[in-house]
Image (cartoon, rainbow, N blue to C red):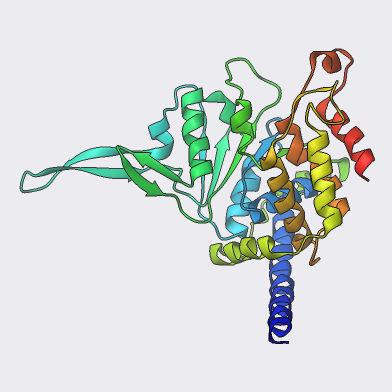
Length: 331
């Protein structure tokens, strides 16, 4: 009996925490929507990524408010946000920081570490594919390890730590595409599309007048960390787990898309999808994810972790097209 009582107390605690946190997250989402118009899906997927404790890669042409989204997220979530503009001459030390030689008044010399912009809670890596692979790797290692090492000394990054990197899908000349192993570090690849006509009309009036709407803080870092812990405690039904496993395994060369897929997602994709569906449920005010969450989040979680065979590309197939085909067998 004592065991069942403790389980009930735990469940009641999760329910109360989920209701409170869900309200705070929805308030944050609404606050972001008052500044960023016509990008509801992008805002939702970005919040899901952050709640899951992950990093996102935003793909979109210039002028779609990707930078403004990161600034607004920093204010709304109460995080210390910084931005790095990636260029071909950017060095790892420009991101991580470096040691400088100090001399005291007594003439004693010692090295002092000056931290770089990576020491932020929310970091925007603007046009990440414009930097050299060496510089990309420095950031991507920090994303994975949550710490950096300079001159043999370890420096822990702040908590929470999230990277929102951007890429321009149009101009690829002089860029260094991210290798597959590094793409896998991003929990989601989020497409930022053009706003619809009504949203663009609203943008015209809201952003070119004398007064501009400013973001307001709705959360802080401690609240976000508590929400991320809660996401990992939400229960997941067997049907959802089976849907995740079936979908991810079908997206591999040995799966159902054998003739279409050259290489596919590893177990990190399953972990990412498991966290993302929980986070989406919490964002919607639900206590457990559904199979619909798996289907809705499959494309942003899987598409940067797959490549098509030459035959599939010659037939005009695309990765989103193949994922949709795989989803029909799950749903």
